[in-house]
Image (cartoon, rainbow over all chains, first blue to last red; front, side):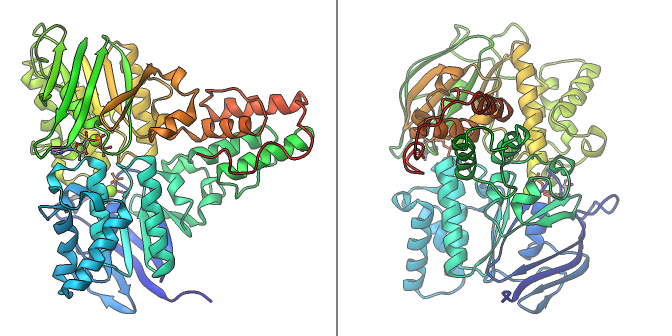
Length: 286
Length: 295
Ligand SMILES: Nc1ncnc2c1ncn2[C@@H]1O[C@H](COP(=O)(O)OP(=O)(O)OP(=O)(O)O)[C@@H](O)[C@H]1O
Ligand SMILES: Nc1ncnc2c1ncn2[C@@H]1O[C@H](COP(=O)(O)OP(=O)(O)OP(=O)(O)O)[C@@H](O)[C@H]1O
Ligand SMILES: [Mg+2]
Ligand SMILES: [Mg+2]
C-alpha cells in the first residue's frame, strides 16, 4: 500500500522581488512527497533547488499555484511550518544562532516550548547522530567548515520534523562525515518515517533515494528511480547540465567493453561481482 | 616560492590545529591538500596565504616575511590570493561586476584593462556578465556566489592561488569547468594549492598530494605515486575514486589489473584486455569472501 501524501505542490511559481522580468525561480513546479519518502533533488546552479527548499519551508512566499501539507492548504504568504518541516540551509554559517554547540542545537526545541527533559533528550540524540557530542561545549564560531555543517544538521534533527529538507548537507563533509550523515538520515527516515528532500550536486548520494527529481530552470525536467535515470534511461544526463556519478560512468565503461553489467548496478560491489563472474566464465561472458 | 618551517598553531581556547608542519611550495607547483574534517586544512591554507600568523614557526614568501596580497602592484613580492571555504562571505560590493572589478582596480589598472579582466574572469567561471553583472551578489544562488568570488580572485592574476574547497556547491559542469581551468592556470605557470575531499577532482592536474591528519602532515609526495596506495589514503580519511577502488578490489580477488588508473574507460579497457587474453581465473571461488577487501 502506498504511504499517504505528506506534501503536494501544484504548479507553484515563485519570483524574487525585483526580478519581475525573465524566468521565475520556480516555474509552475509540481511535486508530491509521501510520508516516509526520500526524494533527491539535483540540477545545475541556479535551477531553483534552494528556492524550492525555502518555499516548502515557508521562508519565502510563492505567487501562483497551490501547496498542501498534511491535507492542509498553505497560503502563498509566509506560513509557519517549523514544527513539521525542518530545513538545513545551503550555507550552514547563516543558520548558527547559539554561542556553543549545545546551545545552538537546543535553540529550536526550546522555541517549541518543550519540557527541559525532552529538550535534553533531543539535543543528546542529535549531537550523537552527527558525531559532535565531544564538542558540545565548543564555541560555535570556532568550528571548521565541516564541523559547522554537522552542527546545522543536528539543529534540524532535534526538531524531529515530518519533513526534513537538506540543502547540500554534505557539501563540506569528508567521506566519513558524508557516510555518517547519510546513515543518520536513513535511520530517521526508516524509524520515524521522516520524509526527506535531499538536495545535492553529489549525484552518487541520490542513488540512496526512492526517487530523483532533476530541476532545470525552475521546472522538474525528469523524475524517477535514481539508477536508471542517471544511466541515461530518460535521456543523456549531460543535457540537464549534470554528469553521472563515477560508479555509473564506470558501469557504462565496462558495458562498452562488452561486460554484462545490469542497468541497475550502482555499487562497486555489483561491478566487482560482474567482472569476477565474467572472469570465472572464462572470457567476457559474451 | 612559499617556505613554511616548523609551523604549529593553537587557537585561543586551546585547540591545536597544526603540529610541526614543514612545507616548501615551488613556483608554479600544483598541489592538492586533503584530510578529514578538522584536520587543519583551512588553518594551514590561511597561514600560507598570510592571513593567519602561526603560533609557532616561520613562513617566507619569495624570501620575504609576508606575501604581497592579491592587490599589490607588480614587483612588490609574491601575490597570493585565497578563496575562503565559505566563499559567499567574501562578496561585498553592491553588484557582481563591481565585486570582480575591485581587485583589478586596487591593482591600479586602467579602465579598459579592468573591464577586460572582469569580462574574462566572469566568462572563466561560467557567469554571463550581461545577465548577472548588474545583480547584487547577495541575490545569487549558492553556486553562482562561489563562481563570483572565484572570478574576483582570477581577475587579479595572482602568482599563487589558494582555493579552500572551491568545488563545494558547484554543479557537475561547474566542477568540470573548474578542473579544466586549474589545468590551464597550472600550464600558464600559476602556483595552485587546492583543498578538496575528492581525489577525483585533483587526480588529473595536481602534481603533489599533501594530507593532513590531526594537524600533522602525514603524506607529502607526488600524487601519481600516492594514488597507488588507496588503502593508506583511506586511513587518512581520503576516499580513493571509485575507479581506483574497483581496481583494488579486483586485485584483492586475484585479477591483476594495473594500479593507479583513475580514468573509468582506461580501467575498463585494461580489464577487458585481461579477460580477452584469457587470464586464467584460479580454480574454485575467486579470492577471499566478498567485502573482505573493502575499506
Ligand atoms: N534572493 C534572491 N533574489 C533574487 N534572485 C534570486 C535570489 N536567490 C536566488 N535567486 C535566483 O533564482 C534562481 C534560482 O536560485 P536558487 O538559489 O534556487 O538556485 P539553486 O538551484 O539552489 O542553485 P545552486 O546550485 O547554485 O545552489 C537563480 O537564477 C538565482 O540567481
Ligand atoms: N577560530 C578557531 N578557534 C578555535 N578553534 C578553531 C578555530 N578555527 C578552527 N578551529 C579548530 O581547529 C581545527 C582545524 O580546523 P580547520 O578549519 O583548519 O579544519 P579543516 O581541515 O579545514 O576542516 P574542514 O574539512 O571541516 O573544513 C578544528 O578542530 C577546528 O575546530
Ligand atoms: Mg542552492
Ligand atoms: Mg576547512
